[in-house]
Length: 322
Image (cartoon, rainbow, N blue to C red; front, side, top):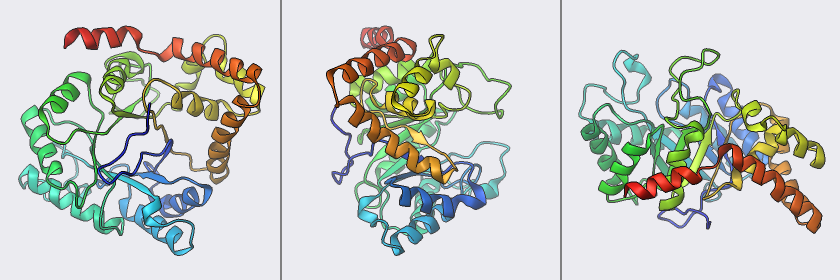
């Protein structure tokens, strides 16, 4: 599948650096990620898991050091709907104001935090309990394209909500950012409140993204899911030993080759692993092209990976529902 592009003809990079849960270390880690070679950064305006202003500091430091230019970067941030009972000070807007005003205020805050005059992609962090409120927020986001915002996306969304928004909206979302896990119910080993897909490995949403030409950005796949993705045959471990790479890097490489355009989020806080991840992804490409034998081994591994996570039956269900 060809790369997904924004309204300003910038393609979504193959892997995105995620800044959640970096807190006070956000700025140096973002700068380190850019120095390692990442050119896509994901953040959010609300302060629950993110420190968007520190992301801006890290980007500014990298640009000042000549590591990159703003034009070389793909920056995506999120408008986070207020959830009842949450600390209102965590949101960059007056939570009592109309939803459309919240979107505009949040985006203005993001532009200031990130020291930029445009955002490559603005993502709705989650849907509201009411689809009417969800559409109000999305339509406010649409009003910002193509000047302050170049494209739109959705996150933590189920198939039915995605289908409704996509069929109703004027500016189509170019990316869906969802948690990638087999678990469809909360797992007690993780922080309470994490979203879960309705179908293992988010197969139904991924099938729809593939059908409609939407990029899919999986997150959280290394949180307890590596063993599930490895399978009984230990396919990640086995291929990793063959090429001299970790299971984590092999997982990223495999995700990139799933149906459609997949840009996984990598949120490592280890500076060495940042570079190892990017170099490892290039190593897989080079290794695969060294010989027919290597390419065959790669395709055999991918077939086994797809058997675990692929969505052939879900594609049929999605197509049959239309």
